[in-house]
Length: 591
Picture (cartoon, rainbow, N blue to C red):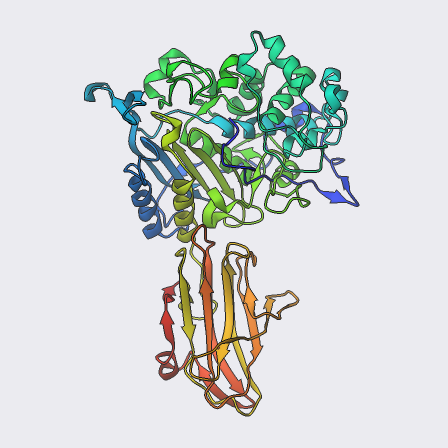
């Protein structure tokens, strides 16, 4: 289901190895067996449960992740965001957190007049379990995208080929130039969705896709659309001669041992499936009553439950296996479903022409609105309308699965993406940042709508030769959250920015003429130097300011020092100087 979040869904990523605008797939095999062949060298260890320490994570933030998630079982602000959820957080091959909360089945109906849920009797309600199966909604798009990239590897589909070269009828209504890549990156020009469920037959539904006119010329705008992945489904089924559900089973779930992932789960699974919505008009396109064990999305339901944009059911562990497979370059144990080059494309931005809508081949990139502080230019993932999300961060080798039944009992109760952001923030916080020097460093915190300051004592820099140096680490929401170096010569009445230069270890110098740093710095330490203004009582401070929406991983400062010629005016390593620092919002964090 197209996410009803306003003008544009934020957004997507999967890039191509490009040279002069050309896409490099020459090294990928045409042999279909090559993509599914066992990996050499004995494969990689299987995914396992383990402790936070075994995963290289801090246990405190993982405990807070669960606490934060449980808060959304209560009104937030008017209704619970979900009736329940299953959470997985891991790093490397260790799942350090696997926790069910709340109820998989709670409500039998929605009372529109009182805006309340009508609960099942207590003995008929079903609590969440680690293996509860969810309707993934649009997370299904990732499976369709992986299947498409497999066919690109095998030479059956070309990334830059017109869709109409495979499906001639698709070229109607001005769509003759839409390419496979544009379907995968939501730049085809399709509008968000059309009510295919109103068409009486499967053939009529397909005809409506073929007859659909574009909202914008291909390649000129980003617009998230279910029609892109429905069209891609039609291409895959045409070139392989197999239905999408068969492709999913034979090419992904069986090789990876994902036994609880499929379209159209059997009736025997129903007691282990999270219920979704009391689907009735006008809020639903169809009158179906409580949807439980069948796909929630109306178009996918009308397509027989098998659709490129929605319809896959899965549990949290299976999604963790998929996440680990992609982070390992397409291999799980001795089974390979993609080549590393293909996975690399999925974590590379194709939509550089549409800043804020970063997208790979099916995978969204760098989206703070649900990835929270896990978001980096290479962080990949997707959400689903029913309350699901998958986030993969190659930078820290970490992964997050949040599966919630947030349309239970009705879609109107859920708003925004706060539980996903909260979980991602805590997993990001759980990845430790080692101090540049010694055992501790100053940390800005990760609070939203906050200002944290770290100020040096007043120093005599009147000689005009004073220089500040330190180690700096930062990762903030770009432009919205800013790290500022500033000084005051009048006791703090007025502040002026101090230009500085940073240098990544082994890299070139980067000037910051406005005295600010924001966005992505690679999550590594940088050496900072700054020439300070001349004043008899100069106060220098580092100020970190965040907006009210999303945050990055924050900022760290270590080894503060001010020198003037051969004189050392301030040195944080000296105990007497360290006690003179004034920290508001910053705290010392250990290795």
